[in-house]
Length: 325
Length: 54
Image (cartoon, rainbow over all chains, first blue to last red; front, top):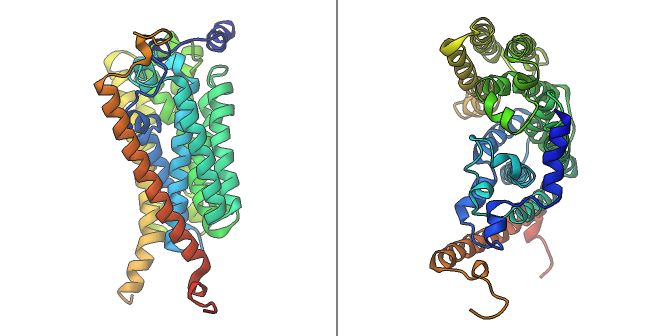
């Protein structure tokens, strides 16, 4: 496995060309191509979780600076996405799921993605530091570097634990939002980090279970490719078992109330139900249906969990004060 | 075609239209950044922005 992986990497280093590299010298991409480079869907999740961290954190931040912090996190996430597409252009072209990205399509050359991503990364960190604080800026820089160097360049092509450790990059936004307000990393912010960190493996592996062929083609050592579907189902189940109790940590640490706690238990029960179905349904269409269902629900699960936290701790107190309650 | 200029370096109408849209988007982003930095400066200076000798 590793030999072939090295082949792909060395091919890239020896001048692997994207369709655009071969066809033109760049400067032909549309605004939409650059927008897609930023992985808008991933960016939206980063924006949302960062906003929750920012609004739930004790203390206050000027609304303009709060918006600037969210903007910097969004642009930083977009930068990481663009840099990921630059480095992964070779495998993106082969995978069905990613073949329509701007570089494999030939709309942009890889160098344009590298320049665009580097500029956004540098700009977002500098603005965060100057406008909001250097603690939040350092975390933002760390999360971009982690996603690019640790996940994309190293782990993704070398170990089935790629998305377990790499998942940390996606778990940073709420901590950055929190630090933008408080200036420090507190236990409750680490709890938010832990929730996304433990959510990532079952989320990605449920996708990988029905996209195994894609990863096999490009020799990415995703867990179902290396260890098989049954082992993946077992790992999904164990990570789900670890995840649900961890979602109660914000409540235990006093950063969330009873509405959040009850919601976390209810949403967690549904998640565990989905993970159990994936674990037990191992054959045919029922198995694929279970994986697809868990993947879709996992997105709603994280969104709803953070939405309840946002409403209970961020929005409701403001509304209650306004109503004189 | 002049020497040294291949077909791949010549832009057609569609390429030029895309470049124009990119330029407009870039101008809008730069304008928004100017406004953003102005507002950030005012926020950082706070009420003191008006408290200076004339």
